[in-house]
Image (cartoon, rainbow, N blue to C red; front, side, top):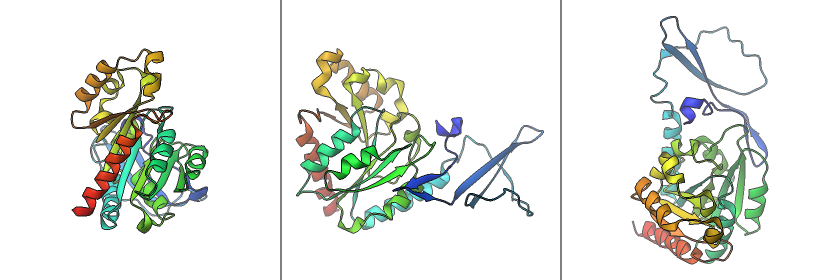
Length: 276
């Protein structure tokens, strides 16, 4: 996970091409007794890292509480979504599983039923954002730089570029990665994991944290199942083992098979939320 490999350390990123300057930096030092000392502060870039003042220090177990700051921001995002009665969806998967194509189909299918906005996360380029803008939806691009996942603070910055009051559904297309995004709550009400038939049947067992965190698992590219030699029954068994509470959909964005049932589910969720 990110807390082990270190990629959770914040770095520069952009929202719709504009650099987000200030973010927290965390510094760690190992003391002679083997304990780890951590201190953090916020600053912009482009200055010498020299400070005449002493930083407050505390000894931390790095395996505990590393995501606390993200979780606090996620709760703030969740509160904002609830106040606006806004359904929010975090879509995660391996690269190339068909997230963007499915989202294009979903937004077009929901026209006249749900008003959609999109936040797209990628390390670089705005290719996916450009494709999604062809649907007429409001789209904001986050370029994460070196980070292999979106964080709640990034989503909060991107939200400022959208008029959330006119939306029914906010779709967050996460960076393509089945590992690190599992650890980062963005404040979403629905976490959707895509699993394409071209990935084989064992991904849910190889990446259990991601599938365990799923509210919905969508098996994509079903039109290619025969060509890929996909064992449907084994795949569904593995999904149910890794994600027993998740709702499962099977669909093809290319042919449209199964897309209507998926969109009906989203529309029903929004109706339910409106009654609560």
